[in-house]
Each structure stands twice: as C-alpha cells, then as structure tokens.
Length: 386
Picture 1 (cartoon, rainbow, N blue to C red):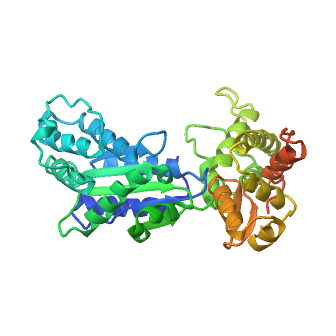
Picture 2: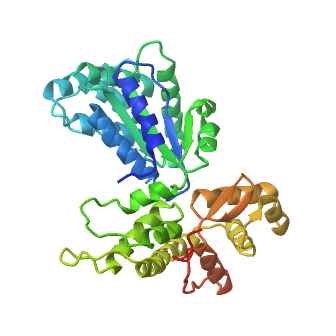
Picture 3: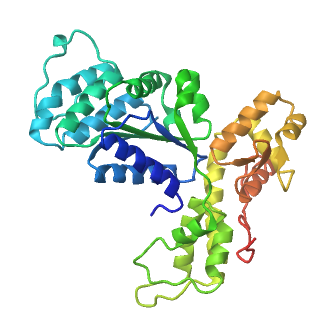
C-alpha cells in the first residue's frame, strides 16, 4: 500500500491522461529522495496506474552492469511479445531498428525481423520510440509508459541517448504517445545536467517523509488484519517512525508479531509492543548501516565522525572548519551521505543524522577501530509523542 504520495500520484495521473488523450508530451517526471523513502514503491504504483489506463509499461532499473537504454528496449520488446500477433508483426521492423540503435540482443516476438542490412542508417532513440509508440497507439493501446528506477546509476552513454530523446519528443509539433517517469537520489539533477544541459528543464519532485496522518494510514495498511491498535500504541509508533516508510514497515511488522497476533487470538497492539518493535527495528537499521560503512570513503567517515560530536547537528561551515579538507570535498561527502540515507540536510546548511541510531553505528565503528557495537535506543522512545 502506498501512503502519503497523493500529490505525486496526481501528477503522474495527469501526465498519463494527457498522453492517453493525445495531448502534448511533457519530457519526463523525476522523483528524488534519499534512499529508503519509497521511490521504488511509488514507481511501481505508477506502473500499475499506467497499465490500468491501457499503456504498454516498460519498467527498468539502471545499473547492474547493463546499459539503461538496452534494458528499456528489452522491456518494451518483452511487453510487446505479450500483445496480439498483428501488432507484433507490424512493429517487428521498428523493434529491430531500436535494437540496432541500442545494441539489444533479440527477444523472440514470434515473427521474423528483416535483416539489418536493409536499413540505410540507425534511428535515434527518440525516432525509434516515436515510431514504435505511434504503432502501439494505432493498435489500440494508450501509448508506451517508460518507468526507470535508480536513474542516477545509468552510464553517461545511456543518458546521452535517453535524455535528448525525452527533449526531442517533447519538442515535436505532433503528439508523442510516450510517458516517462524516473526516480533517483537527491543529486540526480546534477548528474543528469552534467551529461545533458537541457536536463535542467525536466520536472523534479522531492519526496519527503510522511506526515502523521499518512503514517497512521500506512500502519493500518493491511485491510485483512483484525488486529487493533489499542490506546496510545499508534501515537507511539508514529513517534518512533518519524515519517520514514522503512521504519513504519519494520515497526509495524514487529509490533504485530509481538502482539501475539494470530487468526485465533487477534489481540490488540499495546504500547509495550511498540517498545519491543522499536528495538528490533533498530537492530535491523544497525545491520544495514554497518554493512554500508565499508563503502564509505575516508572523507565521508570523517564527516560522519564529526557529526557525532554534535547532538543537535552541525552546519556545513563548522564541518569544513573541523575537517582538514577543502570545503568542496566536505560538501561532496555530505551530498553522498545524504543520497545514501546517512544524513539529513535541513535548510541546505544544517547537517544531522537521518536516524539517531546512526550515531551509535558511527561511534561504534570509529571507537572500536572497525568493530561494531551493540546498539540500543535507535529511535525516540515509544513514550515520546513529540
């Protein structure tokens, strides 16, 4: 269940409806957030929405050693292979040219493609998408919806093909039945703009932590469960989670287990269950960030260690003074740590840990020369409703 993303879903719905009705193509909607704030869940929901509206949905994740454009092309071919024979026959030559354009290994469509030598030249990615999506629409579909997760991990070569295609499709005088959605970490606009300057014109939306009402909805996400939240327990869980989707999932799961919930008993969740769930969720969080520690650079570890000295956080300028590194190196380290979920940056300047439990992970690592310590009290007390 997706909670607290009504504005983002409304924006996606508007774009899908515009494309489906033959309106002007808007070149890309990008959702940004540090890791763990529900970007992937949002994209999955948008994919379901697009499928309901009659789009051919091609979902891809950047990285994993593959060129993003290759993965997109393969996803389109895979989805079209499920379509009617007449559509497959009609678009097979376009798919072959798309494959040539992006060097995608063939995917069986049940029909034979003409030899590549028949083509005078390679289509651009934009032209291939335009021709393909137009054929798809004429076959009765609303269009093609491309959905990309972790787009910041795409290679520069893929971005040089994909980003101009989005701009070109958006600049055409005729309608392009393509909808494009992507998600990435907060620094994604900088990454895309470094490859393609016009990327600054795309629409970027930040995902924030959930408010208390959305968190409450998320804690009630299982409509088939008859387990009740007894007085005070839901408020305590909301305070512990602090609007973070991952912690909501984790605390909700452990609280349900701790309540002794079974089909036979169906007891309620009490405040004491939240205390236990908080501790178990904290251990999960410790394991996650302890594993991520090995991937941190020396500069990033230095930043994390300095932040540990300030219970209420610290400004970037103070960090730069305390660390024997140039200001741009400190800022770069802060940016990477923010993207990866270690830090929050408030008002662009004030740096704090994204979760209080990270302090214990950092001090444990630095204090024991790489050995993690047992962590307790990762989150605010279940009795603290502030």
